[in-house]
Length: 388
Length: 228
Ligand SMILES: Nc1ncnc2c1ncn2[C@@H]1O[C@H](COP(=O)(O)OP(=O)(O)OP(=O)(O)O)[C@@H](O)[C@H]1O
Ligand SMILES: [Mg+2]
Image (tube, rainbow over all chains, first blue to last red; front, side, top):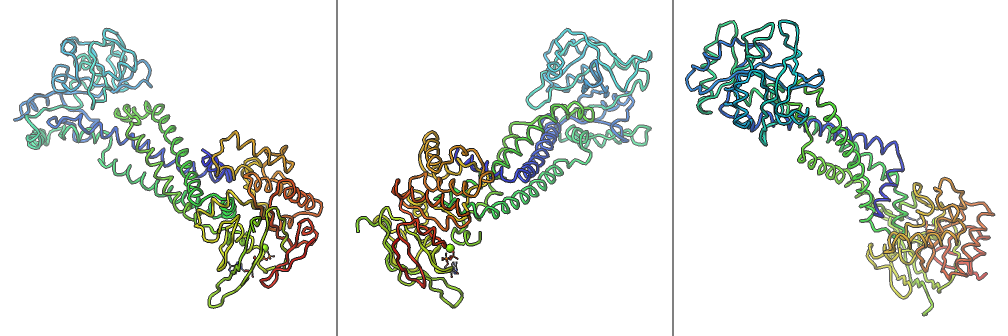
């Protein structure tokens, strides 16, 4: 405790320098936390929630283009396809446009069958499959907007219009997907027919066709067969595994993780050099004071500890502010980001991410303090006093 | 010899400069009894600071022995010397050497951070030391906000606070005007008389040396004594 106070007073010496160093560390941890959260949500999206025997068919041009619904039956007839469903991106929101929803219009019975990992109670699957204005809501969304089973709510679209110009489809919340450990539990699903009959344009088209294959070992063959089926037709297809599709949804390059690692790595190395160098300079300026402390009887090891205490304080203060600001950005900015991609709606700072950040703070503090502390230990009292 | 606080026996000190060996003392002998107040004078470069550093365990002699309170110190390890200094020696410098970021009270408290005393007891002792030097009003001031004389008084309080037997002062009034210097010297005299501190003070100023019980002149590696 006594040494902590001395470390603080060392930092108070040059307040501007200390503030700049803390700011540099803050930036590094802000980048680390925000990119880390992105990376984690990317992993969650492409990871275990994607079943290895599910494929997604999209329009070859890009995933915002549509496919004729007639394709669904033709895909169903491809060998080793055991089930098919389809979905259309709804561009949904609840009441106000900023209340963004990850919303799809889907064929309910087959969708609930194929995506059994959504974890919907059986009686609710029944309702969802038969009641035209039934909406299936993910648990996260139900909790977020305070929906209960039986609530009648409006879901609106910022893409689709009805023939009378309206853009709201009234629905009843009659099924809730609890999701699983790996599933985000966000997203709402409405009945495709109910949606398609009312919309003013692009009728009888779907965004994606979902395929279940007889097993992962058939995936490659099915992908080839499906894409061959529609070759040279007005709407050519591109079929990929669900995992690849989810990844492409966020990151067309597929190497976001690598970029994140590179950016954070560079930031940390830079910060390491800046803080280490500044602290070495600070200790050099303080040679006289260190000599006085040694004269008074402070052992070299204790002086080294105070110096490392200073760099640890810089790393921890900057790092914690970085985490707090990252958290604010993710909490407040998450909804805005979600408009770009639904997976960003699930951005969080995971406990692992926070634990790694704290470990990095300690490491940064120790490494940047090591050389200045060593220099402080070696200050020779007699020669130091001759210099001043 | 039981009342000798410091015994310097045949102490030698030399520096190597390349091939040459520069010898500052060859066989220096001196006994300083408990409660003495010695002023050391002598030309620049005669080795006064070097001697003080050796008495304070900051520098080691090249030969001979230094005994403090019956215990040989010149062969102690660096860390033993460190804690020996903390317990037994208070230093007063020409340029005060206070920590610029700490208040007067925090500066005075520094030596106590090396003890096991709790914060209440530390504060009480800091208060007492500041009262002795007449600066308790200024305890929350930073060194920048104090005059040179006041800073030197804070430095004296710092040297005093851990209650060491020996105070070492290297030109403590070298940077002060006559009036302020007189105050500081009277204070050292008081510490010697009333608190029984043994003081070794290096000075260039014959008027300052008069405040000591005796004056020693160091020249060409030898002492010459003048009793005042
Ligand atoms: N590290 C060193 N290497 C070589 N020579 C040194 C070293 N330190 C001191 N000296 C020499 O030792 C001699 C004594 O120095 P010291 O500082 O003790 O003298 P002083 O009596 O205190 O002088 P002043 O009155 O100017 O303070 C000087 O000649 C100095 O040049
Ligand atoms: Mg000198």
